[in-house]
Length: 342
Image 1 (cartoon, rainbow, N blue to C red):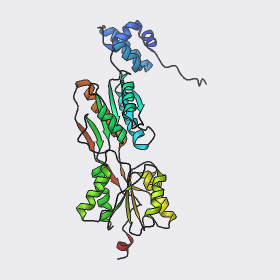
Image 2 (spheres, one colour):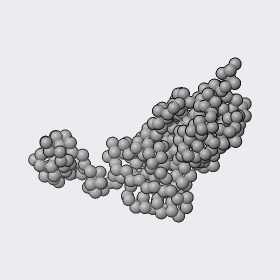
Image 3 (cartoon, helix red, strand yellow):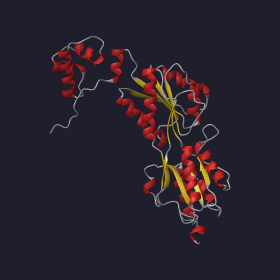
Image 4 (cartoon, rainbow, N blue to C red):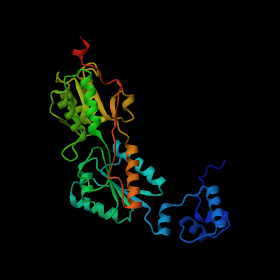
């Protein structure tokens, strides 16, 4: 058996199978010069037989139109970023584009401008800016309006200069907090991810739900993104008997918090209820399985590309595309001991 990888067909192979010249195949692919119906049919039949897919970069050279879109992000490995990038890349590929990613992890405006200039030097057709963080917001605000651009976020933002796709985490956090209050908890503490523009939708939704319910509003507890941060802060929260319910800014903080609570002898959910955010793959597999807010980042990326595609093709796009994440109820939240003992 020959296990050597098969060579990917090229335009010359299509020409050979179709019995036409390479320039004829090129004309059929680009539509730049009329070709007879007979030759066009032969070329398309050869394309199907060979499963030929034109290289996007080569197509751009032939057609004179950019075939790349750029994505700006501060991170490519963190869950929300990676899943959003996955959705963007899949939708762009279906649309015949290749994706160029520029990582900007500096808060210095000079560095941000240099990254923007480097990206625009690639002759991209359009750009998607992931503004899950302050750097992304700054890049979006500085990005010139001369190139089609769409911003992507996890909260509403009225001041955006570009069309925007987002997940309404403020509304989702309100629902999650109301769920914990509905179980009988006197209040809900919030272990927050870093602020984006001085405010984060999850923190706003949490606070709003408490105020509307007439419940005490504890001080927001600021953390990083990683489990170790949740663990460190969780050791302090575990010592406070008033803490019976915690809404975490992401699932990783929730996992770190639950580890700290367990080491302190406080059971989840018997003593403390914990709710996460994002619904990462490990959330359902944890013990106890994590009640969390599921966010469809993949679809977020696809929605953002759809906006950008419309903007590139027509010059206009819907200003806003949004979805509200939903709460997934599992095992990590329950009524507090005082309610269960009645």
